[in-house]
Length: 80
Image 1 (cartoon, one colour):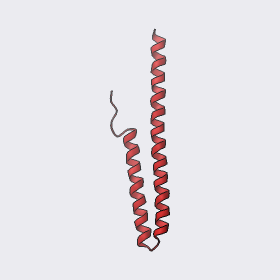
Image 2: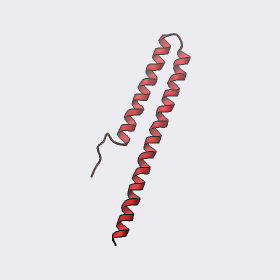
Image 3: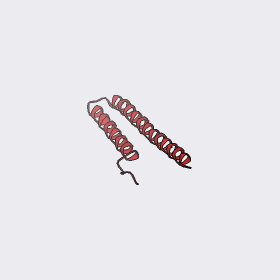
Image 4: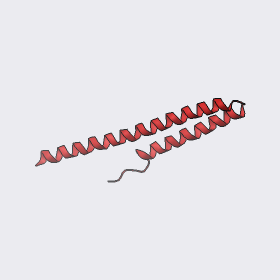
C-alpha cells in the first residue's frame, strides 16, 4: 500500500520551503530597515535550522522504515 505523498518526505520538503521563505522574508525586512547584514545573519540561521530539520526528518523516516522492515522480517521468520 502506497503512502500519501504529503507524509514523510513531502512534509519535510514543505517545512524546508517555509524555512527558506521565512529566511528571505527576514532578509528583506531587515534590508528595508537599513540593516542588511543583520538580515543576512538571521536568514542564514533560519536556513541552517531548516536544512538541519529537513535532514533530521529524512533520517527519522529512514530509521522508521528500517525498523518496520526488521519487524516484518522477524514476523516472517516466526511463521516458518
